[in-house]
Amino acid sequence: MQYAHVNADGLPISLPVGKVVCVGRNYVDHIQELNNDVPDEPLLFIKPATSLCDMHQSIHIPLDKGGCHNEVEVSVLIKDRLSTASVEKTQDAVWGVGIGLDLTLRQLQDNLKQRGLPWERAKAFDNSCPMSPFVPLSQFDDLTSLAFSLTVNGEKRQNGNTSCMIWNIASLLSEISQVFTLMPGDIVMTGTPKGVGPLNVGDELILTLAEKLAIHCQVEGQ
Ligand code: ZN
Image 1 (cartoon, rainbow, N blue to C red):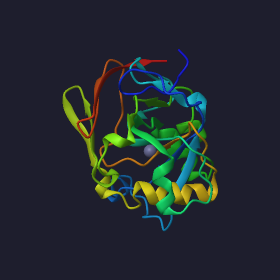
Image 2 (image 1 turned 45 degrees about the horizontal axis):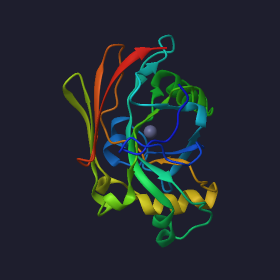
Image 3 (image 1 turned 90 degrees about the vertical axis):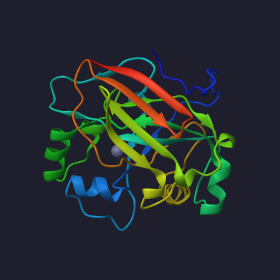
Image 4 (image 1 turned 180 degrees about the vertical axis):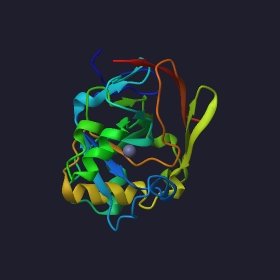
């Protein structure tokens, strides 16, 4: 089924589907678990619109390309064009916040990293970006202390809080807008905390965001 943005109340959101800008290495605990260096500026990459799928459908992982890892990430839906924006200007351009998975073929990514090649084969494939409905921004007091989590088969695997980000959401949006113009309907994924690991067919997932969202879904092969 074709992806479209949905409000947490179940109604469609009248914004087009655009690119997904992702941030790598924004939580120190995750940087340490993969033995990466702490970057001196946000590490950015893009997933295309074709990577998006509705998390309420099943999550489909490739079966023939090595381990496919979960990365649970707070995800921001953009409603207004943002280009070279100051940190203060960014909040007005946010429609709302959801929770997404930056699915990653880890062995393939390691292989590409070692060879100095781009990561798209490991991170930008079809259905690599399962996305929740979005909660309107007005329902949040503060984006700098949002708790979020991923539970796999009843065990809490990732437990994050946006207060642990190296770059908070407003500074990320400002920094990204210096590089890529963010358009209405684009999504920004803000990085994953520690606890990445392989998903398997049949896994039952629960993703939560700040007591606003609790999404149940199941992993299938693709
Ligand atoms: Zn990620």
